[in-house]
Amino acid sequence: MMPRIVEIRQNVLKKNDLLARELRERFREAGVFVVNLVSSPGTGKTTLLREMLLRLGERYRVAALVGDLATENDAQRLRESGAQVRQITTGTVCHLEAEMIGRALEGWNLEELDFLFIENVGNLVCPASYDLGENQRAVLFSVTEGEDKPLKYPTIVNSADVAIVTKIDLAEPVGFQRDRFYEALHEARPGLPVFEVSVRTGEGMSAWLAHVEAGRQALRERVAWT
Image 1: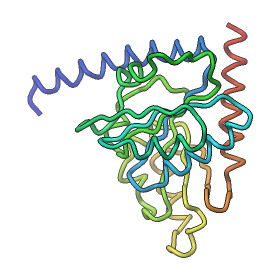
Image 2: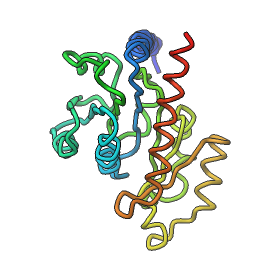
Image 3: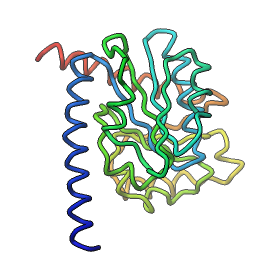
């Protein structure tokens, strides 16, 4: 890679990190818990998020930002939950950046939210380098993708706070080998918490949502002590 290209990339990431730090402070002051969902295309990210918005929306004030290269299809699906949803169309950019998040939040009163969920662009490479000011980054893997994805994309695994295995109801039909997947995951990132979920059957959803709620409670307690 040419030195000039390296310098430009470093400057872009430095700017993003500064903006992400400002976003994180805004979120902290408003008391909103932010989760960034990252995955490759087809893992069921939008379906999972829609279910999260429906369930959490019964007790909390929830909203979502959705990143895609084109169309507002995912945002339209998520709006069916009744939550506030905004689409971020990135064009040729394969990830969301802190500046995009800041612009998308214009006009929203963050103090009126308990949770903000960010559905990143379907990609397991670029999003790893871009902090969005989130409290937690969840990386999703589907049982239909095979068992070695964590080893193929170790950077995103190492940037995550938690992993979610989606479509777990299909594990047996597609021959998903749990032992091999967990070996790959823990080789890439030992000790990373994992949740297995199925939106279709509801399996694992209560445990995952309890984890998200516990994260928000821990944030509120930290803020109260500062």
